[in-house]
Image 1 (cartoon, rainbow, N blue to C red):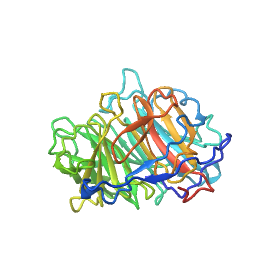
Image 2 (cartoon, one colour):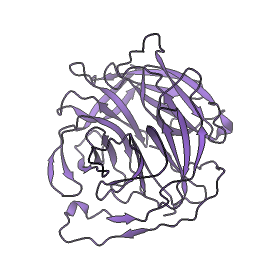
Image 3 (cartoon, rainbow, N blue to C red):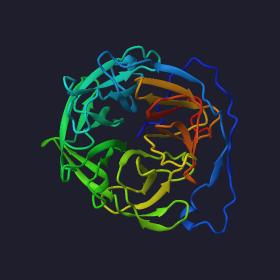
Image 4 (cartoon, rainbow, N blue to C red):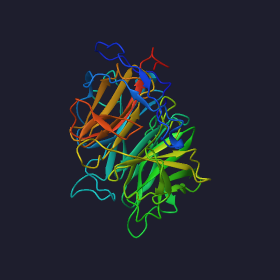
Length: 380
């Protein structure tokens, strides 16, 4: 979960005027009551290709394959300005096995958006870092490693470079399958995705409690891969059949639907499950949105960010070239949901699940972070 109160750094491009506004569509009487709180808005389209500037032109020497992206200011680094943090996975296997002769550690790197030519700090984390996010309350980074098996969690102090490893209890691994991937934080509460679950009786998402005395990360299921969810379009309830939980994020208050809910993307499943009031104590109300992109194939979303203002910057990690690009989102209103997939970058309609591609070219967009422009807090 990104801290939307942090301000973005200026980027050398001409800002476009906001040309779109949210328009509320008439709600048909036949629509299910589960959609009553949705704005059912058709967001006015902004520019199909966003003005772009390269922030990071390539990986540090000896590193490759960045994945998640987060944002955190650290005392003593870059004058305390917010840095962009990503993790280069360096070819390590999903169970933590390095390639022959390859590194055994991922490289967590922090970049100053004003000058991304080289990282301000790099930190080695053992294993393949899959999930990475900031915890603004503790000024730490939280990383998950090895999404398929041999998985664990690490708390990274970017000020000192210290890495504290935690073991899961109980282990998410069953019959050789299972690990952790994306991590989301809200108000100090930590949630991790259960990646590569053995079957639908396993959790799709966990709440995490850290015990520093025992270096244990206690896992409590939030919902299961086979829990019952209501279809976001039809209103029909049925058991899920999630096989590939991957990305998770909290929807901000600007989202036209599912505001405040925890979104869990089933990547190969082509769907997003929204959990209302997740806490690991009571079963949350679940809504599932099935995705489509007009190609006939299952959209495999692997990055999610929602605009919290009508003007701002969308930062995008491109996995294969190892770059970070800043996109000017002027013209797209607050509440616009941006998604990344192997097909590129697009916008997501939360009412229908339809993904509309943007014209910006990426080979494998992964982590996405939206930062509002300093003067546009509350725009929409």
